[in-house]
Image 1 (cartoon, helix red, strand yellow):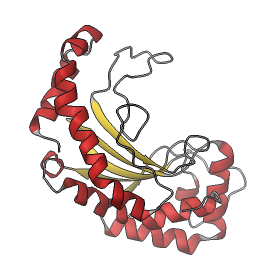
Image 2 (tube, one colour):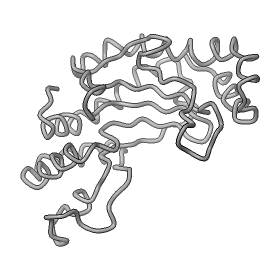
Image 3 (cartoon, helix red, strand yellow):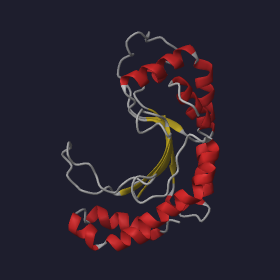
Image 4 (cartoon, one colour):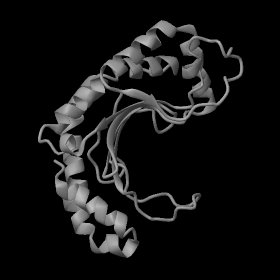
Length: 223
């Protein structure tokens, strides 16, 4: 699995974020980052699919659960070509065509974390989630309690004012103002480097099952 050499490579990439440097050190990326990442995905895959057969866990170099190291620099001011983190996503199988909930692992020197939920859903999906929270608040609150009891916290962007059609005195107004429905829990580097990390990762995702089921219910997706 991951070793300290994984973090060392990411630190070196931070200091030398150029295509020529990456090309010259491609073998180190393969050995210390991509290979252990694919091994983790492969080890976790049976348990991920056991959480839900709708989730995908694919250990492929390209087009699988491991996110590509190249950054999309077309629209931003930051033109650095490479990400300085490892991103692994276990997506709902409908995630390519619709904004569907998923599971995520982030590994970086400035912070590692696990996450579950839906990031930046399009307006139709966002409205569906808000309507579901308004109409089914108790189940949503149970999902939130399961998360907080396990050390997760809801994160992401929120509106500064209540969304149209909702009273500012609504008991769940802070949740209705969310633009992202993401639960996040920080991990230490030490935890990531443990030989049983694949099992630990799935155990953390198990705490997010109520949220995942709720979001899929709101979006009329199987889970």
